[in-house]
Image (tube, rainbow, N blue to C red; front, side, top):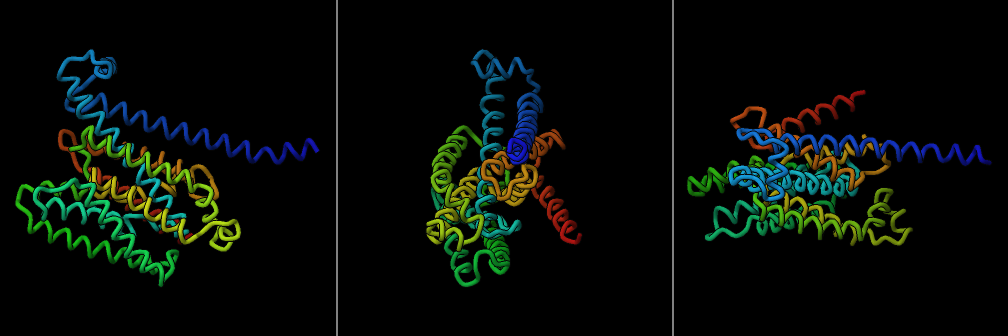
Length: 338
């Protein structure tokens, strides 16, 4: 009997060891990227100077650059990556499709259009967050209307989302042509996904939004796990599938809208992070916490590359994630042929 218990305990012990190792490696990569982001660039700061800036003992220039520019940007990258990772995990679980993510189905494009309408057509322009949340929620209505007839797990819904994304991209281009030149120039950079203008207020918005929406995900975590199986099994466990599914889609849309309001539409983090976490951790379903950690790490590494690869020229981080995402899709296509 003791041999049997030992045999059953090995897989669980192996999974825990794998989780610890993967989490430690991911955190180490994120910490290394944060270290590079804090200390390197056009202004080099030693680790001691960075520590002094945190404690208020550094000179004015170091304090402004480290605490006023680099810390908010790195914090925003980590929080936005986590938000997109969680949104992608939720949507891929509901759709049971690795290609389903907020940016593929059109939530990111809807949020971007909502924010862009506020920036270009309303005077004085409201907070981009209001427009992004409104646009994202309107896309929820449209996608759910399509899903009601096609089924949210069907490829037809995903193709409809791609069509909506293309349509909204044309709307965004039209809005840029109608905006004043200076507004259009800033909005065009924002549409590529950029963290160059993030501030402490943006970090506060992200922390508050992730706190509230993360609490909602914790509250429905049991139902979320049941939906990973199938709807009939979930109903047999007492889950009100329609209500929980709608709540999760709204949470995913608001997470996407918050991230888009701060940095513009950043593609492929929500698509790739859940699958990377799922494969690295070897879990049966899509892990929300693992997806958040992976998304945060991927985005902070991508933003450091965007700042340092062509220094002193900085490119929008959305261009880097788009390149990584294209390689990821090629990898999926290659795997599907085997």
